[in-house]
Length: 124
Image (cartoon, rainbow, N blue to C red; front, side, top):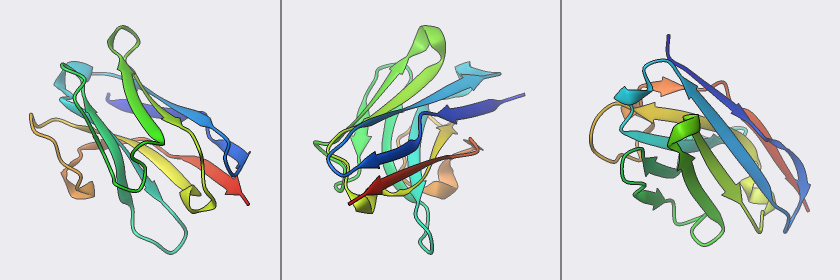
């Protein structure tokens, strides 16, 4: 079975930092890209960042560039999202996702596996 489990969410003040983790299990060799998405109340799920398992190539949404960093530890089958300089508008449920096609995508519909999500709340 394929499983993605997020952790690391919580409540933080504006300007603070959090690090999210996504532990992948199952047939992880099939994942070419890992992504982080987020969904705020009443809004659609949106792309945050992605990284390729093999080469570590990264992509970011404009709204988080310079503040968030995605990374991976292949030995641990874990992807991280370091979030710095957090803003109240970053408040959302953050989801980890895996794509089994060898090409980057920021589209929610083009990721094949999803975690259950972890809540991030940034207070002003």
